Image 1: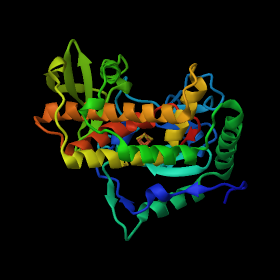
Image 2: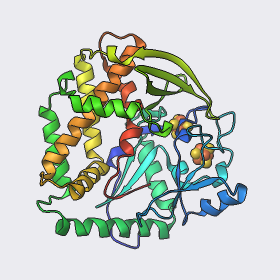
Image 3: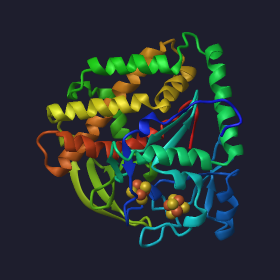
Length: 352
Ligand code: SF4
Ligand code: SF4
């Protein structure tokens, strides 16, 4: 139990189950965070004094955060074995233990799932993920839990004083959920700006920032734009890469969406908005903005950017797969491709 009074929201884990897939290891291709206050911190350094990399930041909230060291610029964690199992399983970090569950410490504690993982199933009877979430919250070191909660509480209680036109997160989320019902979800929401954003993301010099994807047969694929060619690259554990196909980026035409695809996209957007991380991104943008745009306008603009980015990614997958239409399955694949990227948006609050 917490020593301080707080809510914990498990509702986004309801009706879901999870089994980690043998020989996957996809989550180990993203640098997992480790905090100095975790028991794993010293245990990992004892195994390999170069096993961690300190985060380069002046932000006091993140100055004690390190990440697992990766092979080269973007291979897997150096502790992932050839059989794609963890080589330091008994001492792995908290984040490695709880994935694919994420915990957001904001105005309340909220648990949700990272959709980049393929190990989920819907099971209304067993509701296994909710139980796992409760176990995780019980097992988190009390001191760490309280520290994160207190920091987040401090951040959120200062918000009304810092933001003109402040509205609480639950009100903001309810308004945006209503908006999704009326939102235009078609290729017409893909603006020049969203194309430019997508192009610059694909052209990232940093391999770590490129769209990365887990296929059904457990391949790790990365997309990268160089010299007008969009490449699909297979990523090995050790950071070696092999180009497996390419398309001319200028020829990437927007394809029609099936009715099922529109519904699947709408449902996913609803899921995103229900995560408190979404409100956290909006608050952070509001604090940083120079213009006086309202929170609701900022939130709807952010949601439209997300939808446009999802559509561009769906069109990219469709081009590689030779689809003439974006159907429900293509949107599901796009969610696997996109969710990790959305989870890394800087936000107001702490994520574990
Ligand atoms: S991505 Fe999911 S299924 Fe794959 S190793 Fe990680 S937790 Fe397991
Ligand atoms: S410590 Fe283990 S579980 Fe965590 S990223 Fe590395 S290989 Fe994966």
